[in-house]
Length: 114
Image (cartoon, rainbow, N blue to C red; front, side):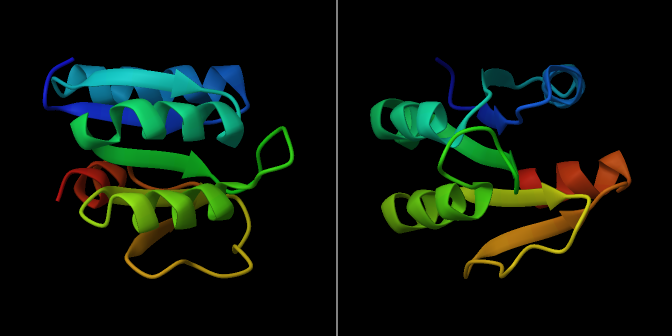
């Protein structure tokens, strides 16, 4: 993998593909997951290679996007973590950005890549 990898976690396949295409169009490699549990495994094995984690708050499975964001920031404090949702999250973990859907794609790119 390159040093410019984004992890996209979204249980809706259509939205996941849109997000993945957005980051690919900006020159990043993308790893896609539909559950936080799968993303946790990716983080554990390749977390140091990631520059951004973008996750929906509500996901299929037992783990939420908020819990995933907390795990990611604990393990990789420098990782850019962005939570996205159509509703306000119960809370936003320290060092994590939140975007309410619908959001401008430029806002997402800035949050994930800066």
